[in-house]
Image (cartoon, rainbow, N blue to C red):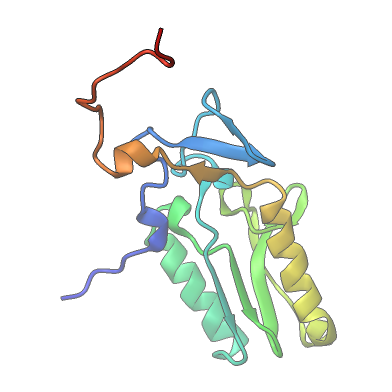
Length: 156
């Protein structure tokens, strides 16, 4: 039997050892990095396709997945670029943030000419706020310490 799995289950924090990368080269240790509670720390999950099931079937499928999955594993965005876009409505407007969602957002056929632009805008709104994990390379390499010898920088 197969169990459903999500890339969003990956531990981007490396058990709290990675730092959040929050700007152009700025890694800050004091920012809590927790994908389970902070949307900005999550892997952005989306589907981008040229075709899809019927709108009602797709919405029902997403609703069923959401009902049976932790909110931090919910998809952020679905785009069938010639048919529809599905994301979330939040108190602040359209956003790919399921953790603040008040409803699913699904475009109508009248919006088909603008779907690629809408997809880009939703994706960019996440990129603008996302934290990226800056890995601790020594930890990933299982090199907690070294048995090297140490010497003066210059001879006397």
